[in-house]
Length: 306
Image 1 (spheres, rainbow, N blue to C red):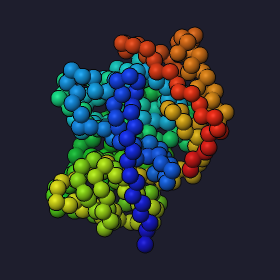
Image 2: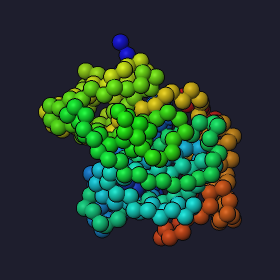
Image 3: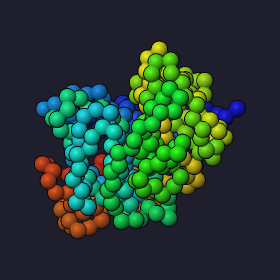
Image 4: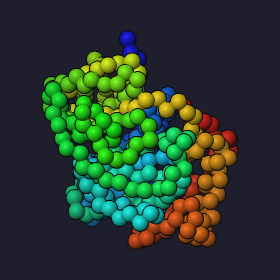
């Protein structure tokens, strides 16, 4: 029998003084990666109108891709490669940090609530120093069994996303009506996760509580997802195991303690002290406020995750 794991979320404040509380299901002590997916935050539904429920100042990333996916609301994205985008429900916004980037995210007053998820994908060593760039894509929904699916990363059941991926991956929104079920043919070499936004579904026959993350280890050829008495909405993520150790701290993904320390030092000097707007992290134009300083490093060496 293929192994299963249920991961419980923990609440984390996101951003600066006007922090938004998010539910983090990855990473955890029990698990760091699902394929190359290394981070999953879910938030909302939260009132957004006239409150800037999300106001994340310019902050850095290295060695990863960020995925922003909304169920409701609208977020204004700005980054140091010159991208300025309004993120809307049903549209993936993927930012490849590569060698280094900074960006800000601010919810607008257009919608009454803010509700969505941010996920990170660790870049493999061979590609983690690529030049940063930004992409968007609106997937077409399709029906499988009782489910409606939208594939925003990779491929699933003959449906593909156009955004870039550097490892074998899949990411999709899944919606099931109450008591609905779907059997999804999958790649047995992948590990999979079901991020439950709402509902009390069963994954491979095992209950996954609301806001939790259910994980299926490699070896399965079909994912059976069944909704309970209320509809299911969630995200299906998966991919081939990364098979690389990463060092992940704050907003950086590297390969060693020393590398992450160097990223932090460069961020503080070039951006927070404003010594080099053409440096590794560039500059974000148009955000009303200062960039976010890095926290202090822990007094122990950062340990690799795998």
